Length: 175
Image (cartoon, rainbow, N blue to C red; front, side):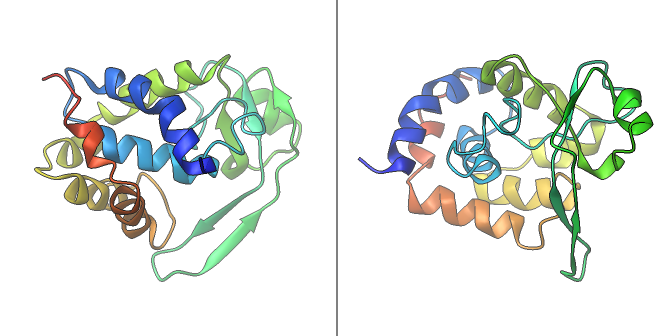
């Protein structure tokens, strides 16, 4: 089996279960998790943050300062160097000199990240994406709503969905 196949086998059912009762397509959530972690390669490095969820001032948990790239709307990419340290809080990281753009949420396990992703998408900002009729449209609307700055983020998600037949996971979801 390939690394990608192993990844979807390992996390597929948990992602499907986490989307039950929501308007989140499991195929999109799995594609995001695959893209954000390199098919699981960076889960440990990212402190179990499987979706690249940033930590803002309102995040009350631990944070990690990881190097990241951010794209502006025209596709220009900027690198922000992280400290690779885990901090007790957002303010502790800022006080240590971390750039706010490098701060990501820390989770005790991957399942915490999988659950927190749903909470994030329930914010009004993502309402258009949750009303998408197809996984492809949901991926495009997540990008449009500002989920990620990656210039081609939405198209890459759609490519992953199609390449690995992730819509099969959508069929497993309960309403």
